[in-house]
Amino acid sequence: MWWKIALMWVALWLPFSAHAEEWRFALEELSGSVQDQYAQEFKRRIEAKTNGEVTVTIYPVGTLGTAEDVIELVAIGAIKFAHASPGNLGTMIPETQVFLVPYLLSQDNSVNKALFKDSKVIYGQLGNAYAAKGLQLLAMYPEGEMVWTTNRLIRTPEDFQNFKMRVMTSPMLIQSYQDFGASPTPLPFGEVYGGLQLGQIDGQENPVFAIEEMKFYEVQSHMIWPGHQQFTTSVVANNVWFDAQPEARKTLIRETMQELTEYIFPVQQAFAEQRLATIRERNPELQRVELNAAERAAFRKASMKTREAFVAMTGEAGQAVLSGLIAEIAALEAAMDANGGTLPPQ
Ligand code: 6CS
Image (cartoon, rainbow, N blue to C red):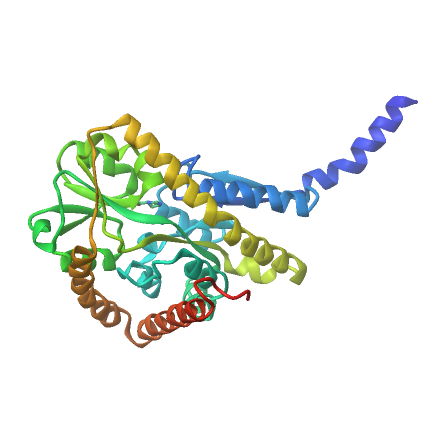
C-alpha cells in the first residue's frame, strides 16, 4: 500500500517540479564580487517569496561569454536577467554613458542612494532608451568608488602624458581619459591583469573590491583616489519576457530590486574596506595616494570637455538625461542641507 501512496505523491508533484521556472541571471564579475552578492540575495528573496515556484541560477562572467555577449543574450531572450554596466553598454545605449561622466554623482552616498532608488530620469528617460534595445532597466546602483592603479605616480593631467590607461569599451571612457591627458586603451576585463603584467598598459581604474579580486595590486606600484566617479552598474531583464509577466510578478521583481538597492549600499562599502585591508597585507609596498582638493579640481576642470563630448555624442536625448540628473542630484543635496545634513524621509 505504501508504495501506491508514494507513487501517487510523485505523480502529483512531478508536473509542478518540471514546471518550476528557472530565471538565469548573468554577471559581469566573478563569484564573490559585489554583483554576485547582489544576485545571491536576489535569488534568496525571490525563491522564498515564490515558495520555490521560481529558481534563480547565477552565471559568473566567463561562463556565458564576455559582458557584451551576455547583454546580447538578454536582449534576444536566451537569459532573463543580467548586470549590464554603462562601461560595457556605451555602444548599444549611448545615453547610459552619462554615468561615465567624471564628477557627476554626489560625493555623499546617501544622496546617490536616494537617486538610484527613485530617479525619474533613470527609470523614465533612460529606461526608455534601454527598452528600445529590448532591455528592461530594473535597477541601478554603484559598486564603489573608482580607484586608479598605476605603474607611476599620477597627480596632474600632465602626469598622464604617454600613459596607457586601460578602459572598458564604452566610447565615453576613451573620451574621458583623452581629456585627462592619458592614452586610453580599451580592453576586456579578463585581459587586464596580463596587459599590466606585460606592460601593454600602464594602469587601469576599478573599485577596490575588483582590484583585489582580479589581483591588479600584484602588478602595480600605486593606488590613487581621484574622487571622480563611482562604478555604476545596471540590472536588466529581457523586455518582451518582462512585459508578458502577470502584474503580480512585475511588482514582485520591482519591489525586490528596490529592497536590494537598500541592501547593497552597506555591502559594497564593507567590501571596499575589507578588500583594501587584504591588498595592504598582500602588497605592503603599494603606494596609496589620495589626491587633494586642488589636484581633484584640475581633473574636474579637464572633465568639463567630456560633458560637452557626451552631449555631442548623444544629442538632445543625452542632454536631457545629463541636465535632468544634475538637477535631481542638486535637489537632493539641497534637501539634505536644509535638513541639517541628513536626507528627510521620502
Ligand atoms: O573593469 C571592468 O571591465 C569590470 N569592472 C567591474 C567592477 N565590473 C564589471 C566590469 O566589466
